[in-house]
Image 1 (cartoon, rainbow, N blue to C red):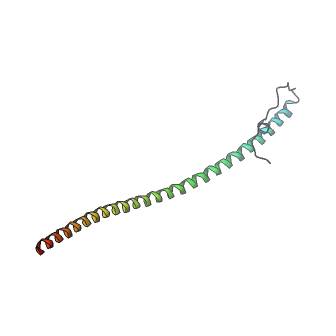
Image 2: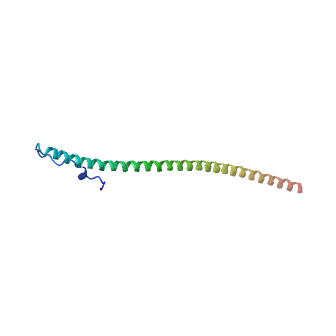
Image 3: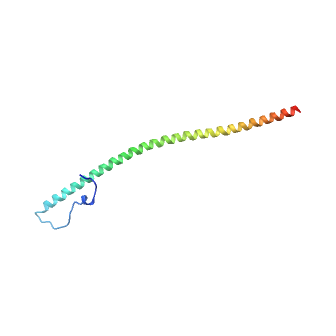
Length: 114
């Protein structure tokens, strides 16, 4: 049975013609059968939607875990970059101090030669 919802499949009442006393049971049975068929189609579609929502929730939870791991890695990377920047500044300062010391030593040795 095709479970695609269409207006035609969901139509359970076919008009407003006058129904005689002897035909009302037949019309009521016809209506009930059509309503049951429509309910089955709706139930199948709702169950399919529930499965799809559950699958999306599962994916969402997995993505959330991955995003948390990525955030932790980025935090650790930021700490490493900050440490490298500090190390670079400290090394630059140390190089400048060594350079000044060498220049002072050179100037003292030059003055001793004279």
